[in-house]
Length: 360
Image 1 (cartoon, rainbow, N blue to C red):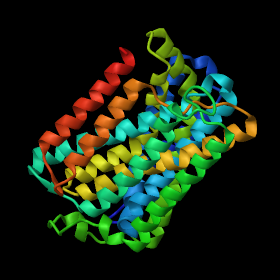
Image 2: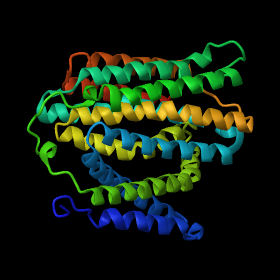
Image 3: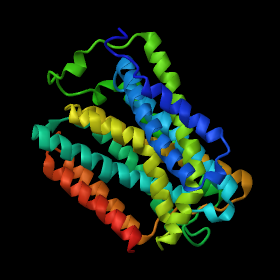
């Protein structure tokens, strides 16, 4: 079995080297230390993707994609909370910027690339529309309640919630995400399975043994752990680089979200390339839901305990882009199959989102 699904040596060595590098006192190394940490960060992300795919193959759909989404989101929450606790009032908008960036990256960037790659290689790809609709309706509700509604409440001025509203939206987010997980994993699991058997050999490959899957699961946690630690260590350098080029600080949230989402993004891309679009969509939409559905409650708890005021509402420009992304996704997934045009449209919206950050 190990011969069929081996664990490549690099997927073990790179995370170990990354942990060793993180613990070594390399502050005086300057640019070399930054470059080394960046390379090991990328290597750990690639290793995480491999181990996640091994585990996903063992547990099957949709549990594999759900596991990766939850694991990566826990890392994202840990990173945001740790930066908030050490950064003080200046990080009041960090959670909002990171969550919004994650949602836009997933809905327009990640899904756009998957549809483009699948459209180029297979012309059209099929998916189960019931599962996608379930994810989208849940995502739209959470996005509206957490990122748009704060701009229009009147208890306190500005894009903020008061404590009672913050508790309410945190509980609602957890209820909606919990309901989605129950539907995905238990009640309507068939909604998230591929609509047919396309003959892809990956569907019929012998699953890894329990021993291999457990080893990959452990290594996945090791990889994700060092990813968040290295990202946090590199955060000051990222902020300095953003300030030096004269870009808005919201770009920091985009960079953090990109780093955190790399494992899922690469896994989704590889699935789409193998004509497994349903797996790609499970990863992408599940990740978006986990990102906002778990991050906002965690940040709300931190804000209530520390007395910190957090900014949740997005500005009008961001609302327009978010609504455009959601509308495009809904129309694209209305027929149960996708093509190259839908991927191009979503990627165009993604580029517009990035451009308007740098040139608002």
